[in-house]
Image 1 (cartoon, rainbow, N blue to C red):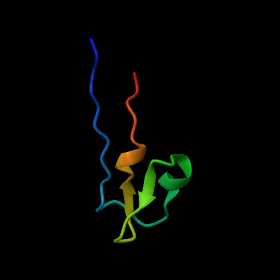
Image 2 (image 1 turned 180 degrees about the vertical axis):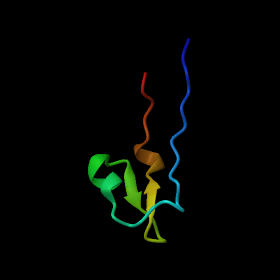
Image 3 (image 1 turned 90 degrees about the horizontal axis):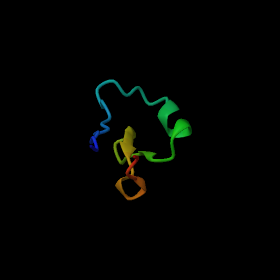
Image 4 (image 1 turned 30 degrees about the horizontal axis):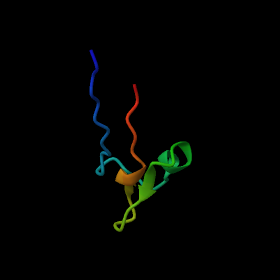
Length: 46
C-alpha cells in the first residue's frame, strides 16, 4: 500500500533565514522573499 504525503511551507513561521534552502534544493525563494517549493523539482519518494 502506498501512502501520500504533502509538504507545505508555513509562511507565517518563515523568518527569511532560508535554512531550508541550503538543506534541500527543492525549496526556493519566492517573489515575496519567503521560502517556497519548486514544483518542477518535486519528486515522488517511495
